[in-house]
Each structure stands twice: as C-alpha cells, then as structure tokens.
Length: 516
Image (cartoon, rainbow, N blue to C red):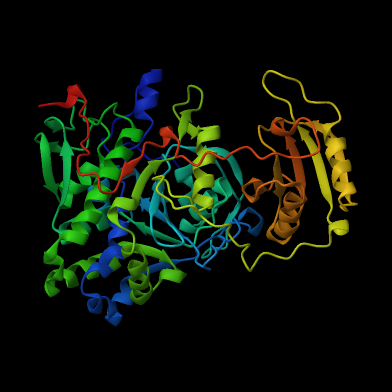
C-alpha cells in the first residue's frame, strides 16, 4: 500500500512532478541507530542493567528462502571475518507519537515501509568501515518471504520499490532483499522509527549540521519538512533533528538523493559527537541515552541483549573516524517512472568491493589471499563436477565468437572435468568471464572450476538464475586456451558519492527557492 505524502499534497501529473513528488517524506534514521552501538565509548557498566534487555524488540534476521541467501563472508588470512549490519529506518505510524511526527493520518496502522536502508560494513581487521545507502525508490526483485508471526507467505516479486520489503513479514524480508541483490551476507540488522529519532537526538545533546545559506523547507502549498536554519553550522536535536533528516525540499535538487547526502553528513557528525562529547561520561546522561537507545530499536536475535550490543560497540570503536566512508549505491532513473535502479557496472563494482572486504577509501594495505571459509562444502572430484559452459562473448558492437563454449568445455574435459558440456542454446553478453553456482553446496565445486582455469575467486558468484555450476565465457576470453584475468580496478566508483567520516567541512547546498 502506498503512503500519502506527509504534507498531505499529491505530486503533480507532470514528469518533473512525478520525479520529485514520487518520493514520500522519509526519515533517515540510520545515524541514530548507529548511536546504539557506539555507546561503548563511555561507561559500559550502565548498559548491563537487566531491564534494558526488556526494552529491546527482536525479529528474525532473514525470512527469505534459503536459495536467495548469500554465502557467509570469508575469513582473511588471520581468521578474522567482516561484519555486515543492515540499518533500517521505518516509517511506521503505529503509535500516537509516530503519527504526530510522521503525519499522513490516513496511513495510521498500515504496514511500515523501509524508507531508510544502509548497509554498514566493518572490515575483518576492523581498520575501516563502509556504509552503502540504497535510495528508497530503487526498483528491486524482492524474494519470497514468510512472516514469522502469522506464517503468511509473500510471493516473490520483480521490479518493485525496495521499501515495500518491510511490509512483507518484517525487517527479515528487507535483509533477504539486500542479500538477493548484492550477494553480501548480512550478519545483523537494526531498525528504528520516528519517535526513536527524536528521543535519541535529545539524549545525545545535539548534532552539528551545516547549510551554505539560510533555509526554510516550506512552501505556500504545504511542501517541506519545516526545517528553518541560518547559514553555517547549527547543533540540531529533537524535532529539529527530525526535520533535518526528513528534508528533501530545500536541499540541492529537492530529490531523495540529496536528502541521502544530508543523512550522511548527520551520521558522520553524530559519530564524531559521540566519540568526542565528554558529557556522555556523566552517569545520568549515559543512563538516559542507554534507556532511549534500547527502547528505540528492533534488532535480530543475535543482537537481542545489551551485552551483545556492547560487544558490537567495542568492535566498531576500533575503526578510526577517518576510515569511515559513506556512499550511495550508484543508480540511474528507470525510464520516465521517476524510480531508480542500480547502475549496472558501478553498483555491482561497489557491491564486489564490500563482498571482498576492500576499503572504499582506497587506503587498504595489500591483502593476502583470503582463505575459503570453513563452512564451504569441499569440492567433489574433478571428474564428478558437472559444468555447463555458455558463450557470453557477444558485445554491443560484435557478434559472439562461434564455437567458444564448445572450445572451453573441451578444455575443461582435457583437465579432467569429464562432466563439462557446452550449452549452445544461449548466446549471452558478459564483459568478463564468470562462474556461477545456485546454492552453497556447490560453491566449492564452482571455486574448483575457476581455479583450474585461472579465473579469480572474485568471478565466482552465487546466482539463482542457474541450476548448477555454470561457466560463462566472457568477451575477455574470446580466443586461446589460457585465461588472462583483467587487472581489477578496486577504486570506489565516482557515482557512489563518497563522504569521509572525518570531513568536518561538509555543508548542504540550499536550493535558492528555499532561502529566506
């Protein structure tokens, strides 16, 4: 069910109106959620009161089908594994306070939507942290999900708005959607609603934000969050912090993308505030923050106690602020619908960097080869591994190289893979050669095939589009019997709109139409 705009106005029927008006007012609460796990920076003892455990709401981590789930993250050479935490902001109008803050009276009690989705990735060695935001109007494929309470099953859907996922059984379906899209294993989720943001902002004592001109997010037609600030830096809290996080009309081009940039600025500033603010050593203030934080969140069962949250906070605390990188999933508009879709090459590149635990700030030390995780099923004997070989050498300017699948299948047979066969029925277009497998029990087999041909492990990918181990010979291997892997570019795409956590100069550009 679609929610009405908070200001009660409907977007115009013009294309521009659809593009701007389509995005319902949302709150980017992810920064506040992160505050919960940063609490370890001061006075951990107050987090262990037993009654705080009862404040925390819990839900299952992933309620999608097993076949749509990503394989667990691989350990590095030292045996350390990364952490992936999905931060979710709910637009729920399920209480009087949330209704007052969120508006849209006609949507009271309707299924909540995941209007904020940010994947927080903490590197295996805890040297860096990356955050990837997904625009809430992104069109994705949502997998089949089963509500853990009602046992209702929601059928899989294609090309639907990503924030619908929360209403299909809870945050576990949003997690399942991310894993299906990115093939990144998610270890935990944390979710917060409207009232949680306001109470957390008050407990923190304010978060400094910056605008380059006086801004009043308000029009005569009722659009806008109501945010009114003077040019420069202001410490916002309570309702004003809520307004900042909800503002779309007034920031840059008045889109949800611009609002995401404001969320990143707030999140970075809040983390710095929590780490530097000495007042949080005050027992009374810390107790208030702990109470507020635990009441504000819903987490998966693996994070369902303050002790576990505190343990997580200690891991996050190891990451220097200067090594926190905020990004937005590269996107492009989907036709004239006003919706967006992942930008094909750039989005997949960003997801790969996260999957392979490569720092988005480009400051990684050279990594040693990662070990195959212990939970990967061992490969079968080479002569028992069934491999289907497909021809993906077609490009936008050239036809497929004839007989390429047959040639590479023969190469595999010569290496002892007697069950390798060519599939000449499909002529595909793949820029680079890839080995796909459908489920975790075949990952070891897929990796063995790749190793035998000199294909890097980064080109071994789980995919529900195949029924067995499938080698697609790409345009980068159109001739010869030896595969030469292209040098991988591990730089973060410029379209990811990077913001470093220690950048204190970030300042939102104000649309001149909203200057007062």
